[in-house]
Image (cartoon, rainbow, N blue to C red; front, side, top):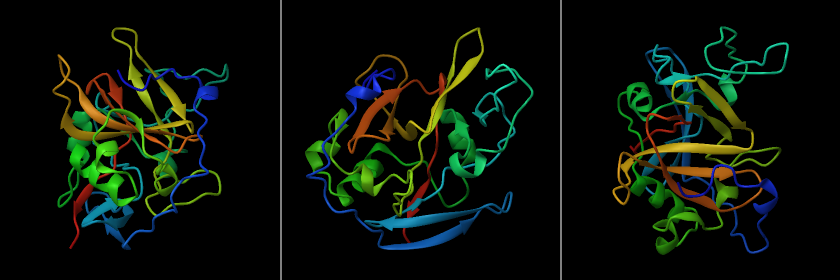
Length: 228
């Protein structure tokens, strides 16, 4: 897959001296999911409302969604344990397979396409050619991420991911270091089933466009809708 998952953090440094000014949303608002009463913010960019919180709706399906687990007394965290915690839920939301992301979507919203992400990236200052490229590109993550004391209207979070090891359970990785977000668009350049995602990290201002297997990983989710 593109943008290696095990890339060394020391190699991720980027020069932000030429980074464009942080782009503010055209407007902001709130949405309430009537299924559970949870409220989410949204921010509007170029005709699309983007949720400003990672989704956290419980689809009642552990195969297709998960929350982060607290480590046990030995400091380990693994799939199949019973010590689930909602401690990180408000900040990082749930992690979903692609199917889980589709199941969790509320009425009136949709899982963003790769084109939706490219449209957002261009609204934040990325060129059209950069937005359509694979790998790390652009210089706009500061307008997307909210980490440390730096805030953005979009407030993307570095929620890590869950990787399902076939036959041996799974593992939660990189919370607070990397963020991975699903799109609904298949990567037709690859054999097999792969879908485009977006990957961000805390110490570089580019955004990675790559693709991942929809059932092997559980990622963060943001939904979009056409602005009213």
